[in-house]
Image (cartoon, rainbow over all chains, first blue to last red):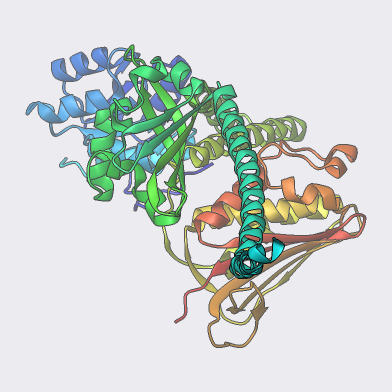
Amino acid sequence: MDEAVSVLVPPVPAPSAPPLRVLVADDEEDIRALVGLAVTRAGCAVTGSVADGNAALALARADTPDLAVLDVSMPGATGLEVCEALRADPSTAGVRILLLSAGASFEDVARGLAAGADAYLAKPFGVAGLVHQVRALTARLPA
Amino acid sequence: MTTARVPAAVRRPRLVHRLLAGVAPRAAEIGRLRQENAALLAQVRTRADELDLATRMLAARAQTMTSVIDAVTEQSIIGTDRDGVIRVWNPGAERMLGLPRPEVVRKRSIVEFHLAEELEAEAAACGAAPGLGVLVHAAQEHGSDVRDWTYVAADGQERTVSVAVTPRTDDRGVHAGWNFVGTDMTEVRATERMKDQFVSLISHELRTPLTSILGYLELVLDEDGEPLTDEQRSYLATVERNADRLLRLVGDLLFTAQVDAGRFTLDPRDVDLADVVRAAEESARVTAAGAGVDLVVDLPDGGVVVPGDAVRLGQACDNLVSNAVKFTPSGGRVTLSLRSGWATADGAVSAEPRPGAAPVAQLAVSDTGMGIPTGEQGELFTRFFRSSTARRHAVPGVGLGLAITKAITTAHGGTLGLTSAEGRGTTFTLTLPRTVA
């Protein structure tokens, strides 16, 4: 099940530092909970959990997270649209973005990365793989 | 008294003689001429009869041709001259494009019934002259051409039509124009699109719940807190195995939809097929042991490197091996043998290089299973096809594996063959172009 992330996984940040802030957006409640769990296991904090693209965008603008985990197919705005909008806005352009999608073809991945995502994970993803991915993405951030 | 007339009487026969002497050959000539005349007349009559017959035959033939063309109402048959001006317009064309023959023949060009944007796009793509040139360039090159075009009917409605284009010659064999025979595929193509969308939608919709099932299972199985009993663990392992199976099915469905839609891409690198075979053997080992099937691997020293997509080649190899295991009864044997060789144009593969032979890699997966009836072997690579032996022995499966394996092989420029004898076993041979170091 592990998505075999070939990125060196750094240690979880020291407890003294405030946890990195993660926004989770997926229209499936079960998946949001699963992603939230992985985010917590990766040593980060879920600061927002929403079910549609527009809400994700509004929340990201009001309270900029360090990382946004976005489902590609969501009502309102799709994950790709949210991704492009975040990149276009200077105040949110630096947010790390992880896209989740049920599409797994090369075209899907290419489209996701072209929209400005930092990483792309195809559903179904393993929890362990997601934890690795979140750690890898947040580790690249300046502390 | 009579003597006085003698001279005259004497003279007369002479004259007659002379005259007769002159007339006789003429008469013969006239006779001959008459005969000749009669012969000629007879000949003319025969020729006239023949001509009449030929004319009637031609008329009948033309009538047959016209009636055949006129009887075709589901296909459009359009004949043009060399410039694309329409000369033949059958009822099928009338129906499809909504214009009667008198309004079209000698008045309109075939180009007027095509979607202009499509012709322009095709002209840009193939470099042919815009207009008629775009429609006929492939037929000009290959003798005929069949493809989908968009016709625009008189009422502006667009139809997707599969059009066969062929050149037409006159009685002296000189190029006279073009034939366009079209079948309306609008509904068929719409159905195909719907089917693809449906498969795609189903696959995506199934993946989301599967993500939850597999994700939460992973959490339960890996939970450090309360340990599970062996029984619970075994139940959950069964759930996980079946969820994985469902996931593979979803992936296969989506993949075949992508192949059908031509949206299937490879990520080619150098791949060592020996690694691929080892991985396939490893993933089939547990199932084979459980089924009492002996799994034998025969690999050459050193690797066999092919240019290809490692993931897709792995999938192809896995399919062949898991099929072989599935179709082999307990006590049987499945052999995976890999070798590099040289293939000639006729497909024969030898171990040593030969002039004109291309380097290939060949993977043979043989089993001692139930075999495939000869009559069914041709259909084996068709999606959702299941052999009678598979159905009779209740071997599980949906009939996607070989279709996928074949598609992957073809995309790699390779071939997939089989030999099989019912009751004795089957060998699938996968041949791929090989990279030579």
